[in-house]
Image (cartoon, rainbow, N blue to C red; front, top):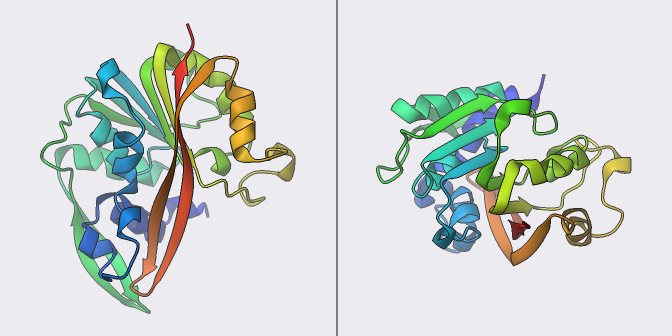
Amino acid sequence: MNIYETRRLLDEYLLFHYGADHEVLPWAEGPQSALRFAIRTVTELADFERNPQSALDLGCAVGRSSFELAKHCQKVIGIDFSQSFIDAAKSLITGELAYDRLDEASASTTLVARVPADCPCDGVSFEQGDAMNLREDLGSYNLVHAANLLCRLTDPQRLIERLPELVKPGGQLLLTTPCTWLEDFTPRGHWPQGSTREWLHQVLGEHFELSLEKDLPFLIREHARKYQWSVALGSSWIRKS
């Protein structure tokens, strides 16, 4: 079974996207700066002075970044390969969603995910899709956001080749990746030959200009006493005219 369709991973992502700081990390000594990643990939990389009217969120998971983008964009489409993630994101447009946070062994706490009141939902939609094989009529956008997606694709080059069509001239491309290349997801022959950063500059340079590069730590809770702390390479690119 696809791990992205399991209830356990859905609950983990709902906590990752919507959990309050104290619900995710009750330890004062913990890496507080790594919280709210799904928000920070938008707020710390996007330039909203460019007034983007439309946004595409690829690999949107359960949708928190899509709702954050809706504060600034009239139209936002979130796409993810996982149907369970998309179903959860859709349900959050009109209501709240209960989920279980694993605490220890078989002990868990029921929490509730909800979209913050300052995030408008009217212009947000979600659909299941494959980032390597997006529908032909998807169109182009002022802003495309893809957080921690590239190194989870079987062939990331297929998405890279589609990006110039998806981002309007002068539009923004926001990318983050923890550069965790695993054969479980991506065959070794499709890994970057050097560093991920060098590869991105190489494959994007013809159509995009780098405007910002930033390290973005993030924290995934497994249970109350075990966490994954990682640092994603974040970058913002402007589509050349």
